[in-house]
Length: 266
Image (cartoon, rainbow, N blue to C red; front, top):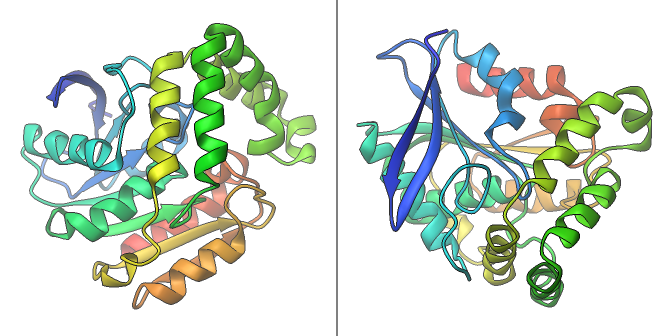
């Protein structure tokens, strides 16, 4: 439906962007997780482009977007979203991000709330993992390069999906593995460094835009408890638990889409 791929200038480079849906409709921005590309949102774009101007983009360092030397910060990654909105002449947008993309949304909710109509934070947390863990992963990826990305692709299903889903939908799993295998090692490492510094636990209570938290019931990375923590901190936030692991929009698309649709209708 009126699907357009384009490049958008941001700080120090360009982002690969896909826009589809009716011109003049409210904008809905989807932000990908660490190690994936905008293609992770294919199913959601097809559904929501009926009623929204859907904007997807490869996060800096990912897919075909610019790879600048790290470390990155969420001030940089969030600033890219602001630059994207400015370039597309979108004053305010609904924003839906998963994992790293969800944290980008939290950052926007804290620092750029005037650009948001609503916020959906999916399979994410106000602090994801430990600084030491992320720094170690960044160092390993820089040291081993493409070999490290291949190793991460091989191990990613255990972090991203339940064993039952891996057995039932091997094609989806293989496609997701291909995304991470193709990511720039420097871009991946630089985003790991952004996550190492990322902690909004003391600030997210100031978020005052309508907020949905989506948590996967089997997510070992960002847990339901992390979702409940964010819900308790953000006034009026809703929590939707879906039967999935970390990439819930891929594992449980029907439940994910319905939770998001109900929130956007509300």
